Length: 505
Image (cartoon, rainbow, N blue to C red; front, side):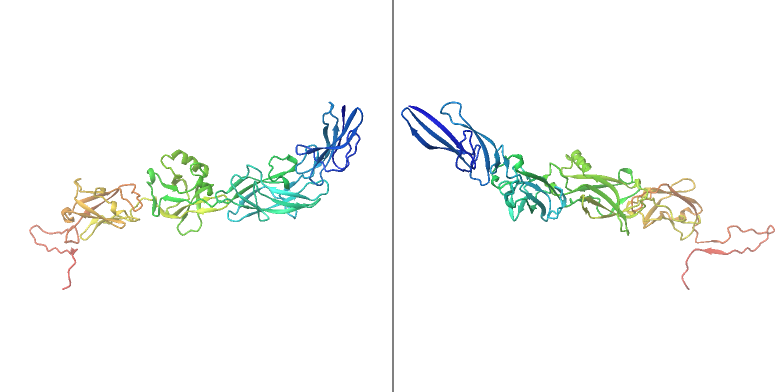
């Protein structure tokens, strides 16, 4: 007995096959998820043959999906037919060759139509960030749709927390929005900063059909992505000026023989691979400042960039394992800096704000001590009760005084034993043997290397000379002239001068 098979197939609502047979209405779905079943519709028997009509029904459970399919007869007797998709519309999932019912779009826009850039700067590190979004379904058939807001895989590596409508938005969680036909939905995404980081460049938001929650390899036109870049304000890096402390001094000798002050900075935070925790702080530049005592305004005298600090650290980190910087302030390079009392401090530039280190007070004093008026005795004569002394225009470093800094010689060049004492801004010289031992002689004093409280040393040797007249009583007139006959007695009168202080009575 011969077997003859006739095949009919149905797809969609009242679709016609290539065989001209119309089937009952059925929802259809074509693709790898389609399921087919064979239905034996009729059986006819004759004397020499038996024939069957076999039907294939392709079903789909999504309301609104529609397909047009061509059925092609098998080339070999008994083989099933081939099915070829002509077109249609599909969703959940999208079927290749059809029009997707979901083509959502995502924009950074508020209800007033204001468009926002995807990069946000100068954000408050404490507060949340509210980002307005606009979601559209892209449906071309006037249908209401359910659109999912989520995050893609391998995004948000620094784990910022995202929320919408009070629900977490992550790679495996999201929020579903009902998007009416031919309309859009406006919402806000809240971003909470991970306290370990201040910069985020790989935060992505994705909108796609709600049924695609666990699918991460969609067709490009059935989802939309927006990248967010967020930069929060870091707190300014702290800083410590290890030295100088208060009481610093710059004199005419200075550091290394020049008019310089060495400043050492430490305890600041650079964004270094050796110190990942420093990413918590901001430091663009370190600025050195000074101001004169009694003034309000600070003046910048040097700026050190973060790159320079980084280079210094890598060059000297064997000696200074933690970030450090040593700077030599050359006051001679600034002609506006006059001698006086000053304060210095550091100012950390953080891009959007500043941090100020504590001030250290000190003195710039580069003038050498100079003689005031004339050394004593100023009249060039050392009388009874006169002193040998010299006064200067500024306080002297009496603790640094040494006897070898002066010498006294007689007219014949011999050395006169003497001692010298320091009193504030003057030196007092005492003759060991007393002035009467040199009465009538001329003494010369030489004084050098006079040091003031700031460490400045006198430039030249100070020299002065005087005659010693150290009698208690003497004639007022140094020379008496008398006319007299030889052998005659002539009275002579003269006044005596005394330098003694006589008691009353």
